[in-house]
Length: 129
Image 1 (tube, rainbow, N blue to C red):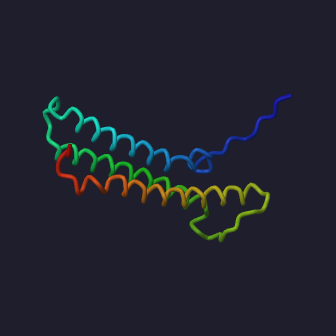
Image 2: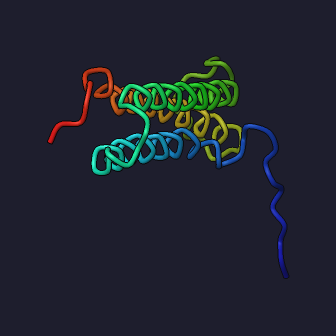
């Protein structure tokens, strides 16, 4: 016999926990691969390095906004900070609060990681060989 567990609706989904790290990983790949490909085959592209820097800035802005939305959903799930940790009771309410708090912490870490991934492009002005 199959039991059907109710699906969480809204921000209580487990997918929200992985949103910010996935955004960071995608941002990391986009930034580093685009710079690596551009610098390896620079003569094939008609754009300059400054255009690539602007594109990375735009991708970074989108990633930071996505992470901020994830953090806001996590903060909302956590109850806007009204409940202090630890959330260690075996209840659905405490599991939801724990997930919201963990997602909020992961969002903060991912936000800082995105900033640090994009930071080198501020100092680079051209590809060095």
